[in-house]
Length: 142
Image (tube, rainbow, N blue to C red):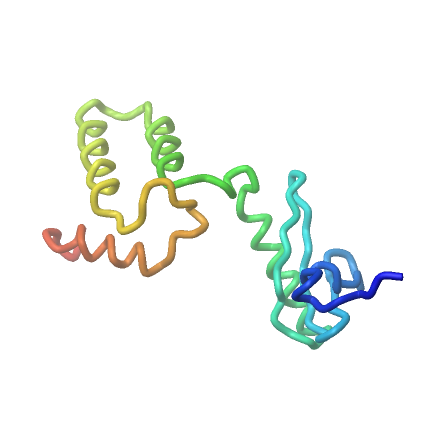
């Protein structure tokens, strides 16, 4: 007969029990987790609480946030996002296109993360750093 082992040996997922649709409770520490499968990919999220009522509310918020994000774009890099943006901007004047190409090149040059970074991994501080670098030569209205 096998022993259950600790969560370090078997992983957190082995200790989760389903208590409601998409809501799971950890058997050892009573914390609540949300699990949702979208397009064949399972997403596991700690709700950060041991209270069931709070967990229900946090689960609803988390599921709402998941619906706002297109699951197909979950693994998109910054380079892919820029390519998608450029492809969508076909109906603009040639002079505008030249300006946008310059701004995109400047973005690639000055953004503090490599272009192969997942968009989901970009932090607010990265954007603030980039805005600080770009905004030095701009007026506040820009």
